[in-house]
Image (cartoon, rainbow, N blue to C red; front, side):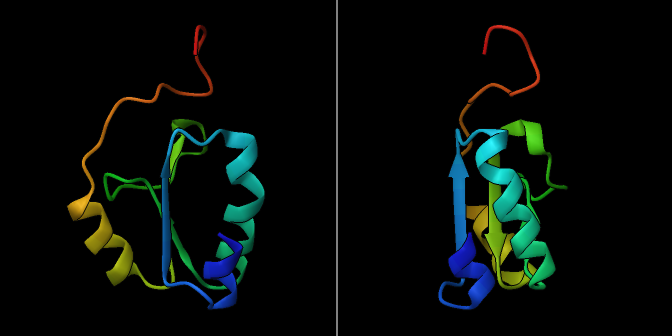
Length: 80
């Protein structure tokens, strides 16, 4: 995520990452002017365990269209 924030990468996505691994990177990307969203193309949900980070909304939306989702559970439910 920091590579996207610094301009060294155009995008990054992950499914299965935990909220404690996303929180700091999401803040850095947002402050750098990057885009963070759910892999469905919707708003970012810290507890969803999935995200797309990109240097532009166009890139993030293109990735969201190509990703095949699979269930990873949430960080805010019992029995993860």
